[in-house]
Length: 221
Image (cartoon, rainbow, N blue to C red; front, side):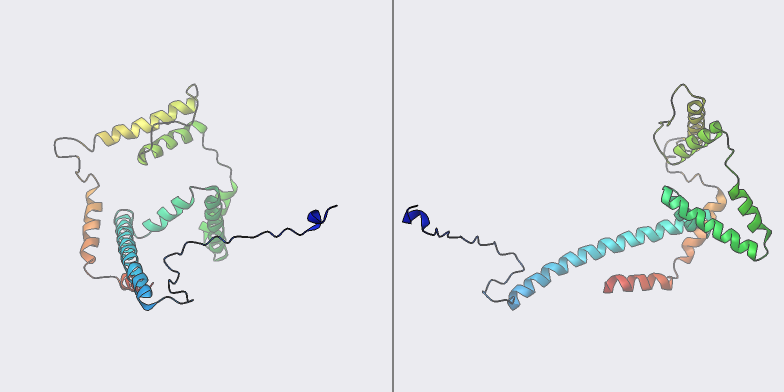
């Protein structure tokens, strides 16, 4: 082996300089200059104000949505809607059923007959005919403004009943809306629902302390 082959080879490593980000100091120290800190603060102020305005708008929309639900479905309306949303998944359905069982047991232990009745009902299997379930699914799809797409094969009775439920509800809607020029936005709700919402809107002039607390939280977070 020659002396040259025994010689150690020196590898020179070159360092790649990373591009400086906006938050890194430009003066070679570990601290940002005061004017750099000021520029960052002004930039974040604008971002914060826009995000806070968007959050307040969404919060207001959510509160108005809840008020309308209460006006049309009663004081327990929001709780009903929350449960319906939860029932949209298998995990949510299991959680709702577990709460019902717990409440039924509490009622039975408290000596209320309704507790025993609910427990007996929960123990019974669902004996609703498949065609009846299909028809109700069609009605629910129409109510939810879903497309007319039955989840059944066209050669089944469930398909026919699903379509019957869907189109039956659509026909009912057609008799209530669009009855003439300028009538598309007509409020077709029962009179008592319209009165209930009007009464609630009158009460909105007195602001709920809880809403003030929510706004204070938004301004400080």
